[in-house]
Length: 186
Length: 138
Image 1 (cartoon, helix red, strand yellow):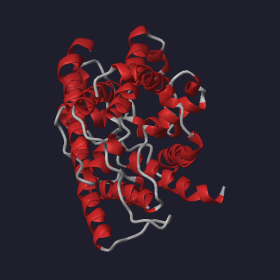
Image 2: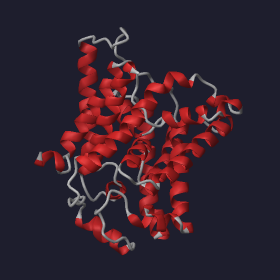
Image 3: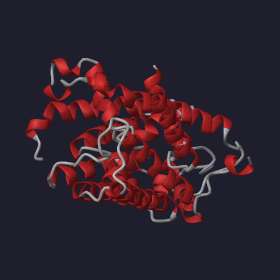
Image 4: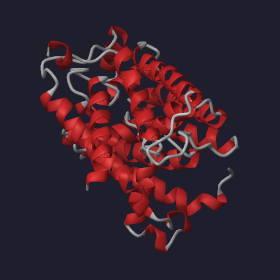
């Protein structure tokens, strides 16, 4: 039980993610979390105005059930399978860099209160970061035709060149944000 | 409902694995793009290596899925611009809010409810893509 409550190492969780991808293929489906955003748009009636959302979303219900499970899994892992006093074992330099940006208690929660607490959300900068970040993820993932699950895990595992290009794009974007834009933001 | 139980189970395992790996943490994404830890590279790298092996073995053994056809990953369309540009935009957002689509849902379960704002914005982004799709270079 001790091992379960502690964070799981990468060499356990990485292969488990591959098994999850493979299990969905075995069930005749494909691992892809961002497709659900399109499905949710279609359910909300976006298909009446935009062709892209005019599809049989009922065929995607299985994937929404995966999302429901993921939310439950998040609850189980966080509240039942974690030791609340264990912090994220970040590198010393990461903690130092974030302290310099004005982030405190680094790694003591899953997401930083400086961005996700209600105080932060109700500041102009705070809400803009969440909205712009989410918007770029939603737009970019559909433009690229997949996200981390569809391209980085499923696409690279099946040795597809488009997925390699997309993953290079993911990292280029992330590096620009962290190394060029963060120093301006914080 | 019965046929959905297996998908619910896959989702639960997915949520648990991503929380226990800390890949849902904004901090881990920041650390990854700073090249200050091997952790995230280890997760993605070992997932891809295991995935390659599983797919090679299932091809060799001609494993069929539960629908009765050979297990196969659908091929992505050929292209360059949409993948590099879309990827770049995705990466900017991923690093800014520290969450890609999977973790967005999972974080709701961990009680980080402000992630709902990120999800709403992601839905808007997806909608705007659908609206402007025909005008974008692909």
